[in-house]
Image (tube, rainbow, N blue to C red):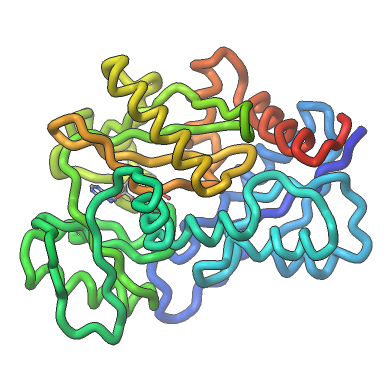
Length: 331
Ligand SMILES: Nc1ncnc2c1ncn2[C@@H]1O[C@H](COP(=O)(O)OP(=O)(O)OP(=O)(O)O)[C@@H](O)[C@H]1O
Ligand SMILES: [Mg+2]
């Protein structure tokens, strides 16, 4: 029986420091999610060793005896945090599930990822960056309303109702908030009114498989207009996922094609999730790609699994098998 190590950052391990925003540990997994993933891997016929986070991996690495590592670790601070575990594993020649360090850093840094999307001709909202040293904003060709996000975070960190700004004064205030609270540059984007979708993808190269598209419903509405996904909404019942998205075949095809191109453009491995907004004229825009999407029961993977007629555990098994195949490890 093959042995799978599990690397993760548990919310239980995060110690809040003075000055931390309330969503400081938002990217980390709940202990129940870690247990669920361990159980799911076991249910697919593997033995599991829970390793823990990057520091715990370093402590254990000399005696580590696993065939592959299933990595869902988010890491600590900065745009390379998700790459910490993959780099340690690469240094020791240990195979792992999911994308490598380059892809994880490139995509966690939303500005680097957007530059790549533009180079590949993939649609993404117009944007500019504000660094702490910038004193004036050059709005360039962008139109209000805009949305202000931290440059390298996930889990809707830094996003609350005030993130969408309608004038210069609100923009200045919000940029200051992001710079001071998250200690990183701000990404300012054109706000896309309309609808929101997210697309899970599995596999590699010729076997890339787009899952049924999921649509985001907020406060019972699919036509979101000015509404968006905030940190507070994630943990409330105001946010629902609809799968499959009730959209035309034409839009579904367009979104699936763009999602596949994004996945391939950043060299995503085994699994990932691409987030979209579609404007009121039906034009899709890529917001980001997550090569380390949340696999929790509350997220979208159980929904897409059900839609394709398999269980949540089996989808985790498929992800693992894509990785084993990539490394030519016989199961
Ligand atoms: N340009 C935009 N126009 C409209 N809404 C946006 C835009 N950018 C972000 N949003 C809203 O903010 C949410 C979070 O943004 P984004 O996906 O870029 O960041 P994230 O924190 O990495 O996401 P996740 O929660 O998926 O990890 C989106 O799901 C969407 O609702
Ligand atoms: Mg997102």
